[in-house]
Image (cartoon, rainbow, N blue to C red; front, side):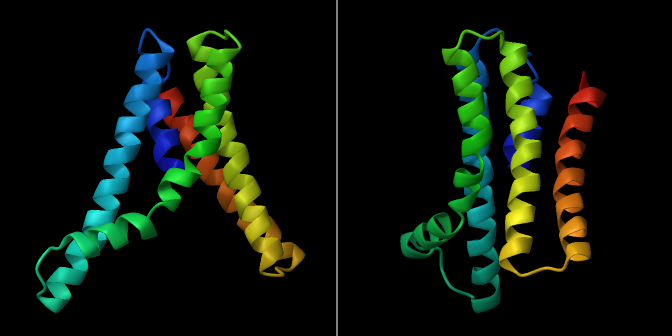
Length: 143
């Protein structure tokens, strides 16, 4: 969510069309997923002195697929805005606020699942909110 949020904050309607915005976000997300997976494989290879192989890379790509799943809510918000005919800047705003809401929700659900105390839930939810608002701050600073 952070990766797609940062990309959308940087884009923030700088493209002329939804297609360009979605396309650049998907490409950046794919590169982030690949880089994260490759870094995992490379670190393992350095420790074990193994050669790069398709099995290890495939396993890392599979293991890091949560990066792709995490981007679904903001991308869906962007696509929904496009389908409803909203202005591109409105669609990007909707996607960014979806990132904020998703981060808060995920932190809250993780805390509940971990049986966190009320104080821990406040802290965990605050961490999600802080990360989400940092994405919004990035948009403000860049534009």
